[in-house]
Amino acid sequence: MKIAFQADANLDPDIVRGLCRREPSIDFRDHVGVIADGMPDPAVLRLAADSSRVLVSSDVHTMLAQFRAFIAYAESPGLILVPSSRSIGSVIEGLLVVWVDWTPNSLKNQAMWLPTPVEKIP
Image 1 (cartoon, rainbow, N blue to C red):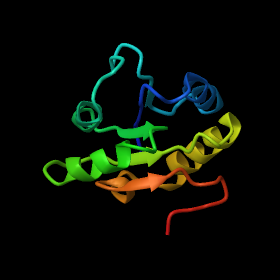
Image 2: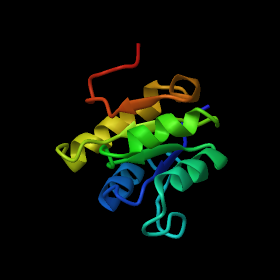
Image 3: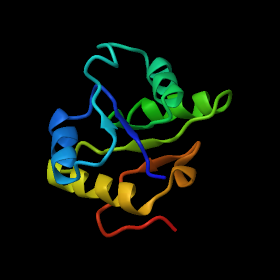
Image 4: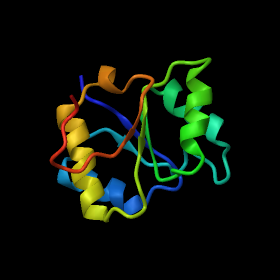
């Protein structure tokens, strides 16, 4: 079973498009029509959890704390944090590593920083 992703509203849409072009079979849902502008972090986390999708977010300032609060009372497929300093190409390659090498169980209730393309989960 492969990981399904949910893009947060703050994730560059070129990342989703580029990754889906690179690997057409990846299940990566864009935020458009799913996450309203200004939706609070707990609601975004709930939406991702309800659809069994790992949330991919560039909101490295508040999302981690909100995620920790969320998993105190609910299950989550996980959170991947994407630093804004990473290039689009590097993010695409890192997410491809996650999709190919990681399992849904490796991310359950876990918040992880996006790996560099050469990293693998232990």
